[in-house]
Each structure stands twice: as structure tokens, then as C-alpha cells.
Length: 274
Image 1 (cartoon, rainbow, N blue to C red):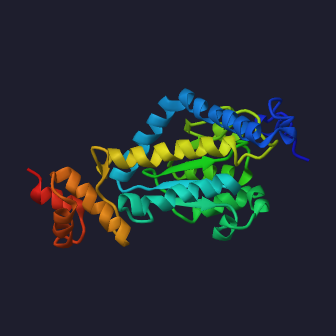
Image 2: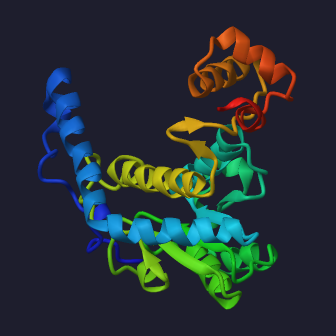
Image 3: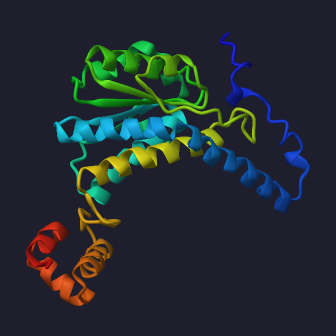
């Protein structure tokens, strides 16, 4: 039996032992107050996040890739962040890759047993042929997931930069990482339910890693998305509004310019910005 009673994410939260007896208004207020702890925890790791962003941006500029890997909630959040990069920043789906223990079927149905195999994680990364210009981010609230540890070992063998996101600083996954993006988010509102504060913390870090790396590699102009994939009417309208804002023209005129330029905001602003 694995001993987890010393891991903060598995401990009982003394602030919420009475949550099942609270009126609904107080229950949600208590959950909200506890969630703030995840935001506060980010403050202590911002220098490490900045270092990781620079590594990821450097990877993109040298032809490398970003890989997220995790199990359960951690894996789902990595896949979510990766899947949002192509439509938001117009990148190839292979640039940012999310991997979850148990494969894509684990996105919808729990496959928690898949996380127990260190060998499976190792082989998953080994077969992807990572190189020294790639970055792998291992995500695990407890910092102990064998699947993630195996993946990190394979990435290090390949010479890739390895980062960790955990809620257990000093954990085995932290110790295996080159850059540690980990902070103690404390016991969960519902004991052991790490989709709550730990998951919120992970999402905040992932947001910064991908978004800031994309900004640094030229996929954002000022604070505007200029590489949006215009795959539906709403996104075409968004492209028109962004282009109009940059050029100081009406959205209807911007839409016409985009139609002549394959709906490429970058192409239009390169041609028409004074």
C-alpha cells in the first residue's frame, strides 16, 4: 500500500470539515475562499514560470515542440491547453501536444489505473523521439505519478528540457525536473479531490506557459490575436474586428480585405498598416 497521508493534497482540510452542514450560500463562499489559495500560490513560482516560458519559446524558434503529460485531471488539463493552441494561435497541432495516461478515451472516462505504469509513460515518450530542442511538462498534483515519472525519464534521456507542475514541492516529480513550477496549494475542500485547488493551480500555470510563449514568438500583436484560425463565421468576425482595431477602419472594410487575403490578419496588416 502506498502511503499518501503525508501528502498535503491528500490531507483533510480543517477549514471544510463542516462543509456538508452549511447553507448553500456559505458552502459556495467557502469553496471560493479556498480557491483563492491556488491563485496566491502562483506568486511564489513566477520566476520559474518565466524561465520555462523562455525555454518553450526557444524550443518553438528552433523547431522544437512542447509536450504536456499527466494522468486524470492533470492529463485532461494538459490536453485542453494543447488543443486550444491551434485555433487561438494558428499553429500546427504537433507544436503543442497533450498526452494523458490511458489515451484519448481517458478524457471522457476515468482510466486511473493507467497512471501506475512507469514503463508506459517511458515508452509513450520514447516513441515520440523527443530531442534537445523539445520541452516536456510533467503534471501531477501529488508529484508521485509513475506514468509521469517514466515519461520524464525518457525526455531527460533525449536531452529535452523537463518541467514539473505539482502541488507538492520537493516531490519525486519535482526532483526529476530541470524547472520546477510547483507550489503547495494545501488540502482540498473535499479531501483528495485534486480537480479543485490543485487543478486550478495547474490551469493557471498552463495558461501562462502556452500564451506567453506564443506572445514571445510573434503570434500576438499588442494584446490582439493575429493568427486566429478563421474556421467558422464567429471567428471570421473576430478576425475582422481585430484587423479593424489594428488598421483603424470599420469591421466591414476589414472583412473585405481579409477575404482578399485568405483571412490572414498578418497578411492584411503587413500590406495595409501605415
